[in-house]
Length: 117
View 1: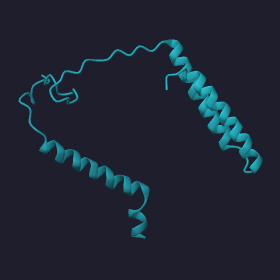
View 2: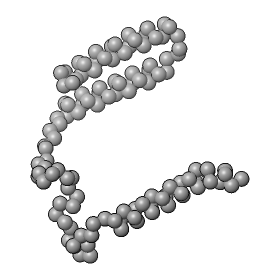
View 3: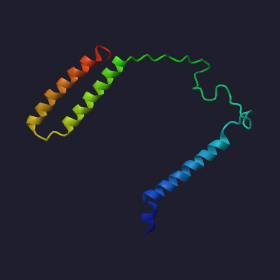
View 4: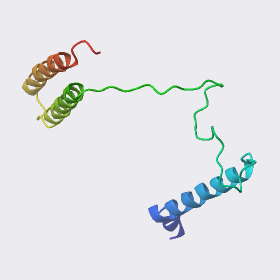
């Protein structure tokens, strides 16, 4: 009886939740104390990624609507191909049909990528 209580999903969730909270509290105690801990001032580089002292310059992302549309169409084609192939019945003839279908999908993806791969 007790084994089934401890292995039930709600009990396991509670145990892991308590474990995560305990690790959070221990990590808070071990963390370095900032000079501005009680004040509202933030450290200037607190939330920046560590890069060995280098300043990270943001890279502008320039996606045109045409590029986004091609990418969305390519993913739609691949998802439909996965759905069609996964729902085909098992048999030697369907394997050949699936191979021809996937070859056509591969050609479509190559055309949509237009040398971006």
